[in-house]
Amino acid sequence: MADYTGFHINFVSTWYPRLCGIATFTEHTARALDLYEDDISEIKIHPIDKYGLTYHFPIRRKHIIQQMDSSSWIDAAEMIIGRYHRKKPRGIKTVSILEHEYGLDGNGRDNNYNEIARRLQEAGVPNIVVLHTLLQNPDDYQRRVIQEFGENCDSLVIITPSCKEILKTVYGINENKIVHIPHGVPEPAKRMGSRDAREKWGLENRLIVSTIGLISEGKGIEYGIRGFSKFLQEIEPRYKDKLLYLVVGETHPEVLEKHGDSYWRKLYETAEDEGLNPVEVTENRKLDFPKNGVVFLRKYLMIDDYIELVKASHTTLLPYLNPEQVSSGNLAYSIGLETPVVASRFRYALDMFSDEQGRPDGSGVLVGSKSADEVARGLRKVFENLTEIGTKAYIKGAALRWSVVGKQYVNLLYDVALKPSEIERAKIHFIEEGS
Image (cartoon, rainbow, N blue to C red; front, side):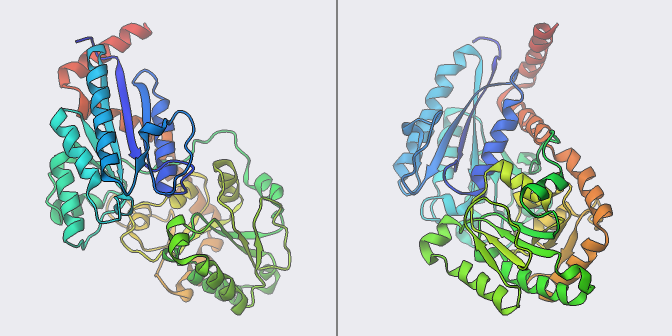
């Protein structure tokens, strides 16, 4: 067999144009891996599709997994195994990365991810599972899925560190298989500054609280609206007309399929009841509505627009309802872009805003769930300490850049795919190449 010449990565995940936070996470992880061209030979995507979407180059139709068709998942496993055998003689190490979420697994109660992991393990193909949901009180099905990952995969990646203890005690996972790799945040490239972003979007005269992302009832935005209204009642009159709550995003496709736009209507009616004079916008434009306290921009934002509006915001408000949520791209990106965050006490937020001893470190503001009073308290605290909280968040975000996170994934690839002697040869090989 030839000397090691790089990794061939195979992602099993959702992918654009399917609107899904995990698709965005996977895209950015793939881009981060691409930075390490000496290590990464090629990246393939097997997108999990449910709606008959059109996927563009480099994804070929045969790579698409039909979510409700178990045979399609098996086909993906066999394709990955085929690549492993074809590339092995050339020294290319094939590795699979499975981005797991229960709701993407067939009808939400299937075990297709584990079927892929089991087949890969039997064929000798290293595979990594990234856990996007980890429940502290799972039902029998949920527990079995994670326990089988412990048997079928080479490594389980957790995004928030407190999940390690849950995996060990609740699911009985071997500690040696658990790896913490944080959610990445944008690089500090020469992007638009906060003032320029506000000017571009017509928000230069406003103080902005924002909630951005796919919209569903689990986001708790109705509590954000009521809390924002209560906050307005408590502040000096000269600031009231400047404050704006900006809610941006489209209804999550799964919610739209089952319930239509009922949650959007509920949010609009809540804002009306609170006397906030809401306005709804459906296209990118200047959001200069000086007489409106709430603006609903009903649009899925591409990454540059998303980053601009996070930068334009004085604070990000995340009143999420699920205390077990173990990841949030909105929280991670806000930290990386130096925008202070007010968040309910869900697991990821608790971990992100704590030091190594688990004590609050002042890099964000935590509030109680389902409480307008708590949201108002959090907004008051963050506006009274904007510079201090933003600076602490930025310092923390420096260790979470996608380039840093990408290197952690590369290191994990070496751990799961190469023997110690092969790793040493690989290092020597690259030293010789660069000398």
